[in-house]
Image 1 (cartoon, rainbow, N blue to C red):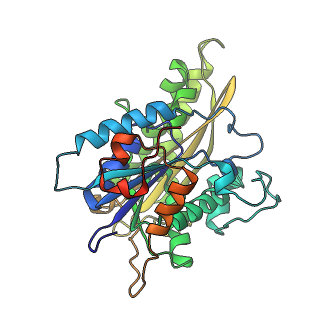
Image 2: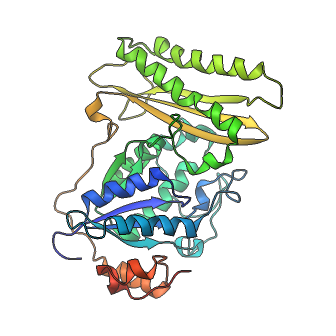
Image 3: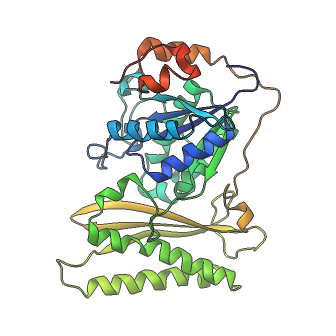
Amino acid sequence: MLAGESVGFVPTMGALHKGHLALIRQAVQENTHVYVSIYVNPTQFGVNEDLGSYPQTLPTDLQQLRALTAEYWDNDSVGQITSVFTPKTRDMYPGLKPTSEVDGHGSFVTITPLSSMLEGASRPVFFRGVATVCMKLFNIVQPDRVYFGQKDIQQTYVIQRMVDDFHLDTQVRVVPTVREKDGLAMSSRNEYLGKRRRKVATVLIRALRAVRTEFINGVTGREELLSAAHRVVDEELAKQTALPPTWRSLFEVDYFSLADPMRLTELDTVTPAHGASLIMIEIIVRRTVDTSNDTCHIVPERNLILAGLKPVTLQGTTKPNRRRWLELRTRNRHCAATPDIVATRKCSKVGQISNP
């Protein structure tokens, strides 16, 4: 790595969509090199969750990354996508086979109490798995900046806390949610939703926007703000209940949260200067159980991008030599970057590595 160069890292589980591409685009603007990982991490799935059916579309993902690489090819004012990292589970978890049990064995990173709050209450191993795999990936890549989406806001708090508490020399960058035209937050799991359930899932953003409207109009009390969300949800649920069984999509709301934007502790009153994070999770319940989540931040507009998170830059620390990781990656043949990406960019130092 040459002096003055930087690495931005976008960890993904594949099934790439425009939300992922927005993270990569932001990373390209802020770094010399951008690394993208594609790995479906088993330890963040509960025993009865959808690990076996999670969408895996590596050929399509690589095609999208090729196109994005070509888009920035002749632009010397931005960075380049130089590596795509697609490890196997045996490489990420070289010791014990990973487990999804709450009391299972293994080497894990646990961030409490954040990991047991909100979504963590119903998915007790989720954030443990996220923190563990991110720690592993950060140790391998040694990035200057890492990029996550605002939609999964609790995840970003967990990652930021991990970076702070373990003195990791990286900045956490949170990029605004990318939405479909109807307002539904883009997610790899959206393909689980049929046409009928997908239409109902927009109740998430409608409820969040209703609360934000109340806040803009001067309402700051918890009960009054959340009642706006409950009204939208109750109206949609009543509408669906009245439909014939073959037409309707019933759903449950796991929780509403009106939380401090720095600690995720629940608030009774929102201070306009400080703001709050409004988070809700909805579970669609017809045929299968699909989980969607969304976040709306009722904070001053200038704070929306980082959602209350301030990137941490540690002074006086020295990054390990990334060449060791590049050599390791070449030796184990983990790079799924296509030859046109690997061989023609400066990352040719990792050697010619073909597609899997």
